[in-house]
Image 1 (tube, rainbow, N blue to C red):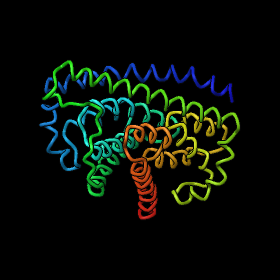
Image 2 (cartoon, rainbow, N blue to C red):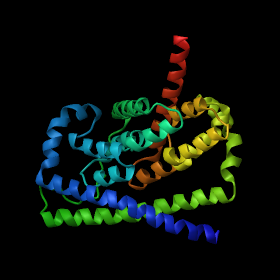
Image 3 (cartoon, rainbow, N blue to C red):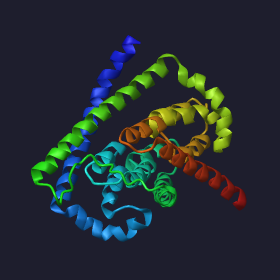
Image 4 (cartoon, helix red, strand yellow):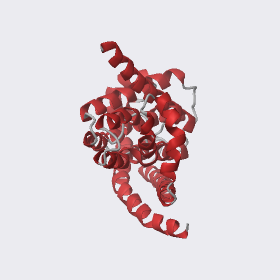
Length: 300
């Protein structure tokens, strides 16, 4: 156990520093853009579209940041804005369904899925999830942002102070989350828990509309995420333990609902309800997989 604790520290520091190199400049740029009124100007163009899903136009910046980069970068943008918890919940789930598209769609391609189809489905899923949440979410008016004052009321010094406090909280939170994930990953590898957990999950795979032998792939995708999970899928394909068709079927579930542990921890720690995150992503994964099956049967 002591070795696991030590071995988890170095990759945690490396990963945290890599993420911060992306997040801090983006967060700082958004903070300044909001102060000078650039965000408000952009929001004016996007408000007519985003108002239909219960979001201000400026929130599109957080969504686009997540779609092209990481969930952490999107969270950094969100924490640089003044949002209600309801708005933050909708954006968070949009980002969790549709994030890191250039990277993850490329990874999907390696294991046999069509990258443009995967990207299109994730974008559509994110928008439909926002419409769904705008209809069912209760009013959550408490503020999500850590900034104490709006840019219209605060001086530049106060805005930068608020950004610095918010960033420090984010850095601590990210380090703690990544360390916990590194520890869990190494713990499961050390004691062979991934393989032991797959057998009880086989009936659940049938409920999800996936092959029974997809339990290991599903577990890997939800513990390690699409990028690391696809590396395992590729290895199993090369060993002949799964077919490319089976890997492709699992990907239809994972593009809506993957990395449940990390993604949920990231936004739940920031205040977004874990229940809404998990239930919404699972719902859309079920709809996509079973909808695809029914469509194929109808065509045949």
